[in-house]
Image 1 (cartoon, rainbow over the protein chains, first blue to last red):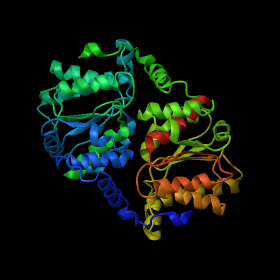
Image 2: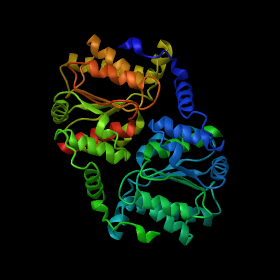
Image 3: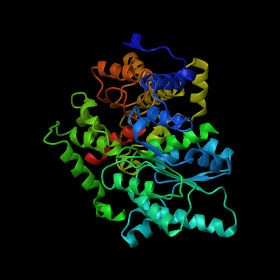
Length: 219
Length: 219
């Protein structure tokens, strides 16, 4: 019945949603800088598991906000996440969203190396990083937002360990079954790299995009 | 530890994921035509709630597959869902993905009518439908995949009731808090319109895209 709809003005829908989330979380407290991110993940998924499964490294949010202010770009592993990130807001600080998944050279490298395109796309991102470093144009560095492929996260872990790339932040929220849990645990081992990880199986390109947007809306 | 990763060839990751889902569902049985859709939603979200919350109207899958074969196009309410739908596969049957959310005329209509862009984008889709009908170019009709905005779903319900559009299928999986549950219940009231609805608060543009893709992969 149409009569059962709550009357909320279009401009107030998001505000009302966050109020409902806050109510249902009861008196639960989070570190203040993580709260907008946790609530936006719940808003995006209607899944309160995100109140428990998100792990933030020390000062991850503070460092990520600084990186965005410095013009960091975001590398992601799906066109869906790229579509969902607020690119207009990001560009105000000088950043852009990069996704190499559909690139011909990435498909070729994956086939040659018997790996996934997602993993190969991390190599391409690391190459870009090193090229920019060599040119002295850090360009604010790179934030990695991985919402789909655990193989991307594993390759990223290896690259960080090898010194092949130094991410400003790793958003590690791939979703699924094969090696998803393990890939996220690898990221939690990194000591010098800021991360936001959704522990367990859950996540997704929508969650990856929503964490990026939560950060952008905090600026 | 890298040593804890399961060794699975890139080409086998999806197959292995579906095996894990089947195992965890135990001996649970679903109507055969709904099973690939339910399992793909679980695969996309790592959320087994989709084993319980998906509601299919009678012959919804059969009718949707026929519509896709006839060249139906898919109208969606987010650029993210558009990005996630397998457009190459869809185009093999003559369909395309349409999203009017970023259109200037939609923004204007929403502002004038005090409604959301999502609702206004449904009016634009209905106009397109009527224009094609008048021209005698049914073009396979329209499938609506709503993964974000309950206001889109409510407007679509009104349009169907008014005779303003006759969808081949409504995928009603908006996610969230304000009027999401109610909007989905409205769709369940429609008697002549095929639907696939994720009852409750859960859903999302990823789920909308994944249901479209599950149907395309069944062809």
